[in-house]
Length: 407
Image (cartoon, rainbow, N blue to C red; front, side, top):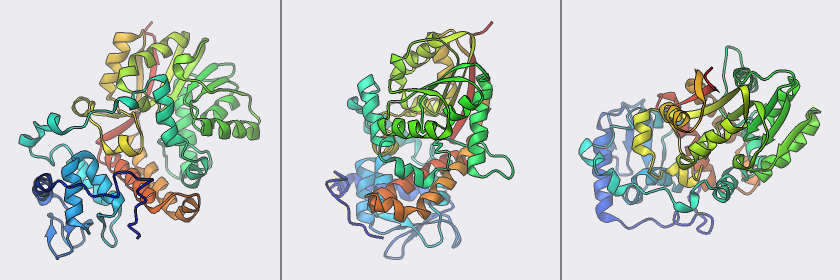
């Protein structure tokens, strides 16, 4: 594995931070944190940390000084950056998600309580330029979804669906994605003649399936790349879909059903009230809403809501995962809507992510040929494995929420 980092493409990553005191503190925290974990941290001098036996997942720290320096400089971001830089990797025979799973299972207790009280002093606040204003949202979305349609095609199923599937026995990924989409459409009551609005088009799979039910479909996106491919897919499928390149705040009209799949995570807490108020404004009397949302426990959401992490820096700028309680509170305070049905699918996301990661790794030569380098490969592997571990242990969940106006 080459560790050459292109400094122009990855500013700040090529240079190891100089934080000797913080590095020593980080080293002490890591040593204590893994003392009870069923993993092995191995070092070039033969030192082994952790409670795992010879068959446990191995984290091979190749450059200890750089690893602890990155952790010391920024605890929440440095761990992932150190993997991107090649300061640590997995041992022979160790799967990255399997290694990260014990960490994810104990994520809230890895740092001693006495030090957790100081998190307000070390947490980096969300960057102002990543606020999800209309302009900021377009910039944030471009940084992820406009990377390359060809990139996503290499690891997604043929439907090009980039959200959690819903598996039943015997399903392949495409069948599980279609079941997920049907679940959303059923919750929202989408049938022949339904005026349906989709907030967040993706690459068009849900809109196509809704149109084939006979619905009158409007779908919106702010991703130029996604819009271009979605229009091609609508034409190939022979469906009539009104795709608009607009922000959700700019939509007018009235709809019998409104659906949105894993869009709220990109809205930002500051804009949840206007997001749900917009849905309420656009929903026709007697209509129904179905959104699929990644969630976390309310106490974890409250603790992390104002801090800036690796996922936000490298994968989803401006992103924030809500709790179901936070959604309920926002609805009660800013809309006439309430949640009337909940369908949790968290364990299905762990499997979805593993299938994506396996496909990404299998198709890496084709991705590499598109101009993505080895640092990107390590970043994307870490992203998919990190999320898989989070869903696998229940730290994260994903739920389909039906919303209506009571009465």
